[in-house]
Amino acid sequence: MAPPLVLSVVTADRCDAVRRFLRAVLAVELPCLADATAQGVPPAEASEFLLRLEYAGEVAAGRWQPQARLGYQRLLERSASSEPAVAVTRCAPVTRQLETMALSERPREKALSSGIEALSDIELIALVLRTGRPQEGVLEAAGRLLRERDGLAGLARCSAGDLAARSGIGPARAAQLAAAFEIGRRIAKATLRERPVVRTAEAVAALLAPLSASLGHEELWCLALDAQSRVIGEPRVVSKGDVDGTDAGPRAFFRMALSAGATACIAVHNHPGGDPTPSAQDRAVTQRLAEAGRTLDVPLVDHVVLAAGGRWASLRSLDPGCFR
Image (cartoon, rainbow, N blue to C red; front, side, top):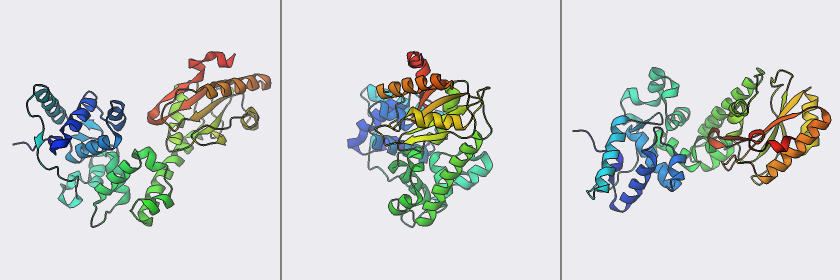
């Protein structure tokens, strides 16, 4: 007999929460926190249930396992028909010690046999941490960190000192984790040195999303371009601000563009809140930069706003009047 689905065994007072969560994520092939919370599931609740699904192997590499998905769909159908859909019993804690796992399922062995891309976020963090504590296994610690810091992007924003002081993982493992994220950022910057061609807002977003994902504040960048629309050097930080905005003066922006020998430029800034929709202030800044670019004969090609999850918005597309 197959073991029961992990979310079918909950306390009686949480049956409605499980149903709400399942209705939110069963419709998508790749269940994620954003999909669940967009449907009204509380973030802490969604994070816990997603973690349970990953530990049970019912979601692997971010993707539903077909049998598990089908099983939950049937549970919801029975629930809609007034049949008991969720067992009433005591919920077991979410624990999964490496010693209890098959060798092929452990993060290191799984990475070697199936490739590092096959690991979930939890498994990747566990691989960096290497060990847990007597009262908390390494997979549990990894899952807790991701829940507390709102996923990989939130965890990447933490300094080594902050992790050591507040995460409960100790200074050595905190430094290891911070180093892993810094390596990722440096690789992203190294890619920019290859002078890629950017002729679309989509190309800009693909290039700079890795740099903006770990920022908890707004930054404005000047992307200097040559006559063939190739990036000159790395993106230059014009200004930094808090989540309320960033000072975007044309003088500082075009000083950087001109010093790079740019024949055109693109403005890029991030919205840490997660919504790339340009604000009225963003439109005003774009107009000022476009006017200055015309005066200096270094046209502003676009102003791209980046947000979490690879989302972006192009002022050139949404409000071309800003560039006239």
